[in-house]
Length: 395
Ligand SMILES: [Zn+2]
Image (tube, rainbow, N blue to C red; front, side, top):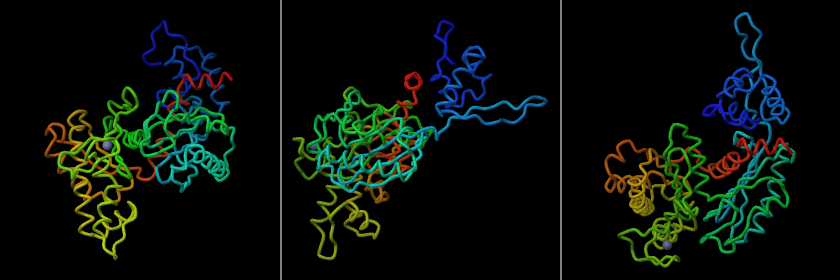
């Protein structure tokens, strides 16, 4: 295996699986060459991977004059993971294959304010139905990825800070899912998993800033190809950075004119409904987006101002981490044009030219699906890691 030194322990089945999954080695001969293992040792490990369904064997093209070599391929159908992306007003659940493709999905229309016990209980019932829809049995489930709109202690799966969700503070979440599905659970922040999903959708980009603008505002950072969670999992919490020319609105965190109170979906609903006449009712973000799409001048103007304030905060982030791509997601992305016009205006005014020269600011490629796909990737990274595969094969 690449990077192995002569003193390394012999490559395990899990490490061979990684070679196959990454496309580094596809035949037993190539695996032998990469790992230095004997033919017998390679065959024994490959047999275990085949038996577990993690790889399949296909006949390759015949080499001139020789027998066609059997090629090993990663088998995306060799199991499933469950994905659950909790939102403030609604959540999404999905069953995905081992490549992160969605096999079945549904929306749980329930405010997260009902609390984690009820919400995750209902989500489990929904996942059971989705497994039936996808005709997948429990035995193939290898893990669950969960995201919540708050700060997460990923090591223990605790919710640490969830200002937008009363009742979710300091709750150990995995047991609420493992009581029904006895598999590993990974928990992360909602924007972090969106960043994972957009990173996977942009394999050419190793430095990206994912910005979610929905009811609240948050960001997730992929730097050097790796998601950056920070020391306490709070990296990317941009919602409580104050803007400089706000109207003086107090925020729950104690500051004034935080991004969340001046430039979030919630703020736009508040400001637009204050202006709205009897003909123009504004109850939620979807109303704001609909008005922007109709060209309503107030809606377009307010969204552009929100974009400018978001851009003010993002400009500092752009100077600090020099992303190649700022991907915008969340419910307000439907009003992308005026939003991003404002964002661009502020970023180009306030960031270094060297940081903005080739900077792309685009809507995310996975709009509406990045939450569940990101949850699937989160847990796949864990359960398909060589050490996890070896553990699973040994039981
Ligand atoms: Zn605040």
